[in-house]
Length: 487
Image (cartoon, rainbow, N blue to C red; front, side):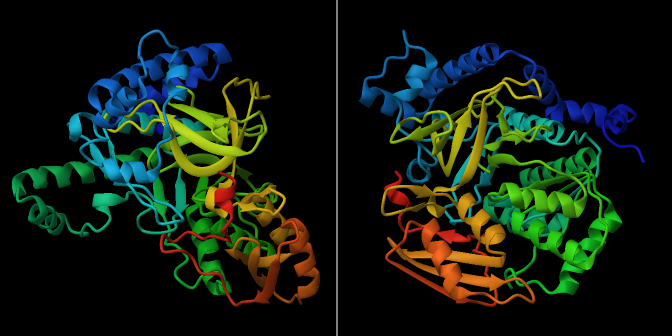
């Protein structure tokens, strides 16, 4: 079987198509990987300066914001200008969309409308111009290459959390048939000829993606939650064995369940590269998944509204930021966090001029680290430790992240699954599923959980049959009532 770049090089049509599918952007990102950090920072600074000038002149929200704060565009370094802007929240985007947050208050030609996903159902509308779409394709190829050397044409298999994971927003409820989709789109716009061309172009892009990326999708687990029947898990193992993907991506919960089924049944499955997506993965969880599938686990960090932001390299140290496309800040109490200090992750996208997202607060917490990495790259390194809304602030002010809680309950206490719900500050319900054939000592578990959470005022522990997913299809194993104290 021909895989990787050979497939593209031997097919002139695919080679030409690849150039418009972000190949040039991917090559530029790859060449920047070998630059010293100061040179990458200089390129990033130049792009940031251009973006800020554009936002100040063409986007009403930023034009008014800069005027209100008396920020002068001339005479200051781009990072200094950036630090004078407030953080952009999802509510800010909702309030100002579309007229004030889009450049000139309208969509640019050939722009694409999507909707963000999330575990907390706080979805927002995003518009991507054509250049940004191309950049995202390049970033996707770059992540595939850095995180597992997965080239164009290599077989990929994904288990998404819901039908909206691949492409949300206006495409979420499109009919399956071509003419049915044309009639559906025309009924909304009243322009059947234009919609015929639009539907044809969208389907052509989708076919192009399939040809270049060679990817397939398996259905999500369904509404029954984490208690998946063995025969259902076996059907996933059979499909993976039959399709023999080079890269398998899926929710950590999905990969975790399938991996444990493989280990419990003593089967042999080999997938070279596994990529957890959609929620936090812990170090020991990634090791378990890698051992079960006989492959290497590479973490990525990004979002539907921003695209791929950072990826783990073969050294498996931390995640490399695509500095040519993003400025990533980690803030604590509104100021830059110290290296290794937990803080809010804030991102500026340097590629979207239709709808600039500047100092966008993603709702995640993490840490930044300086390079260089053993792989030779000197780009900024980050780690994501979970969602802000899943972070517990203890009575003494210390913070316990979602990652730390998952590590403790899954591996230190051997739970099959759990859900920790903080009903009000310092009052918890811990719902637990014991591993098959194991008895739980609830009192011992209560004491251990109390130590982890700083001896809360109340902690009730009780067994349940399953943990159900959120409306988005993702799972939340920690729900905090105290996370605002961290802000």
